Length: 307
Image (tube, rainbow, N blue to C red):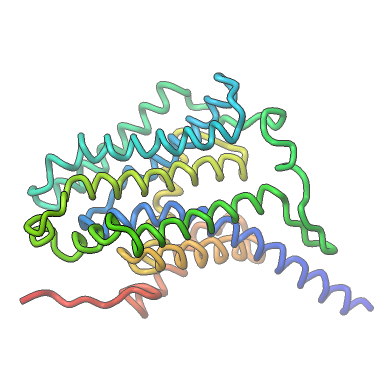
């Protein structure tokens, strides 16, 4: 019975880590979609996107603890505010540089990232904040499913449900609406799209709004899951989400979803079976391996230079 018990324990550990990895991967996918949407439309890596994720966590925390709003009201208001922040970010930092060299916009994105980090530091301080459990729905702390050693919490169910729901909404917007058609047209050719009557700036602002909403949402979910919110949390998550976007194929929304899932699972399994100290290195090693053997990403399409 000894080897059998050991085998069952290993199987339970693997399945538990797999559940944790899928949960984390869903959050990475939400952030990665924001990166890849903006890149797909204007070929810009918005390095300030991680700070929108961080602001989402802090705004929800402030609404719950200071304004004493119910959690789900704070959740919805934070998503709306993050959308507005995304539009404002585009209007102030990126729209004036539409015709500038790409390097100028990239430097501006890094500058906005540093500015927002320091703004959060001034407002909320450097200490790690956490959502008080008594102000959250009580169901979040309860197990939803227990199978032997495997436990799935209601919080994990909530995170996965929100992730799948908003990914489905995003897919509908991109492929079944007029603004989604405009986004796809601009991603191919901005000049021709403008000549055909598409409001390029309005569509780009809408893209920033949707991507920022998903980033802010991910910030809230991570703040709940790890119970830790701090001003530099957006830098680490932003880099990982960018890695997930590259892993799936930068500019490809389904690729960002897949890349986030793969990265989350790889990170959690690496932490569980090797060491938690190497979880970041393991996830990046997976990304580097994919880039070496398939530079366009897991489901990205290789592109050639126009002549």
